[in-house]
Structures are given as structure tokens and as C-alpha cells.
Amino acid sequence: MEEVMQSNSFFIVPLTLAYLCICGLWFLFNKLGCSWDIESIESSKKPWLDFGVGLLACISVIGIGQIFSAGFLIPSTESTILNQVFIWPSNNVLIFSPILLTLFIRKQGLSTIFISFNQLGIKLLFGLIASILGVTIFVGIRGEWSRILEIGSSAIQLKTLSNFPAIFFENVALAFLFIRLKWAVGIQWAIGIPSVLFALAHVPGSLAEGDPVSHIITFFILTGSLTTFILYTAYRSRDILWLGVVHYLMDVAIKAF
Image (cartoon, rainbow, N blue to C red):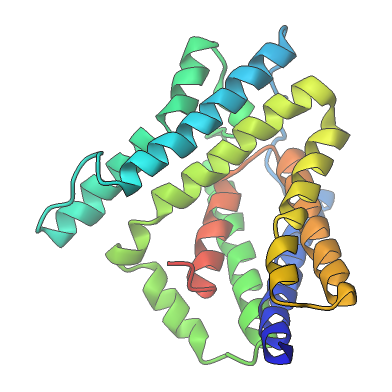
């Protein structure tokens, strides 16, 4: 059990510090007046309706994801390149299509999912710089400096890049539901509820592994605080394009795929 706890700490602590520094860098960037223009978010005349429809759309995403797992969307072919370039990205579009359909039906703009292509170059460049910082902190704390070149090389390979649409759409889904929750209950609850739920999701696993209460509480605080800070940063920056770059490269670093 002690080895498991050390292994978990060896992962979550460096990851938490990496993301805290990434988010902190944006606030510093913004404080210095170097950030992109922060755009306003559309409001909703029927917030609870939009939240209900949004929740239904996200449930539909999960359902289509299960259909994909059962092999009932676009099937893979013998061509690895075709799978990576077309089939896997296309399946992701299908999986997350309820969100895109909801935006169209409710006549809601991309600002309601934190997307704007204004000053795109600045956003992507900042995302790359923040990612390099985060990856460096993550591997540095873990004493894995030798992995930096490996991570960079892996990130530009087609096999790895083919996972970017899935990662990006995950960000879209989170932003989509976050904004609709904000419309319904306000910004504090929109940040607080997902943060607490995300932290609570790790408790059953810790209990099953027999972790001590102090360990569970520490991890609860770490994961909850990290989620809070990331959501607040996304809300303040009004953009998930730079966060998409960060999410992708950090996932490469932690070997998420």
C-alpha cells in the first residue's frame, strides 16, 4: 500500500505543480498586458433550459462514445495512416456531434465554448510556451530530464497527433457544460461543483486501496484545488485553444495514450 501511495504522489504532485505554474503563467502574462483580447460571453435568456439541453447533449456524447467502443461508428481499416488521419478524427466528430448540434439549434456562438480565432497566433504560441514550462516542471520534479526530447519527438508523430481531436473535443465538452452551468447557477457554483465532483471521483479508488484518511484528504484538496484553478483560468482567459495545446502536450508527457 505504501508503494501505491508513493506512486500516486509521484504522479499527482508533479502534475499539480505543473498545471499550477501553467495557469499562473497566464495570469502573469495577462497582468503584464501581453494577453489576447478577452471577449465577452453570450448570455442566455433561458439559462435552465440551456443547462438541461446541454446536460442532455453531454449524456448523448457519452452514449455515442459507448456505441463507438462497441465498434458501431466508422470502422477501422487495414490502413494505419487512413485510421489516424481520417477515421479516428471523424469518429471523434461524430461522438461530440450532439454539442455541435446543440450550438446550431440554440443559435449559440463559439464564445459559449470558449473558442475565438482572433489573435490565434498569440494563443497558440502562448499555449506552446506554457506547455514547455509544464512538461519541464513535471519531468524535472520526477527526475526524468532525459524524457524531454522523447516527449517532443512523440508529440509530432502522426500516431500521437491523431489523438489531438479527442483531447480538444474533451475541452470543448467541458467548456460547453461549464458555461451552461454558469448561466444557471453563477460562476462560483459553476467552478465549485465540477471541482468537488472531480475530487470526489478519486475517493472510492483511494478507499479501495486502503489509503489512510490523511492521504485521501490531501489528494482531495490537491485535485479539487487544481480543477478550480484550471476552470478559473479557462474562464478568465475565455479560450480553450491554448489550453488544448497544453492538454495535448501534458497528456503526451504523462503517457495518457
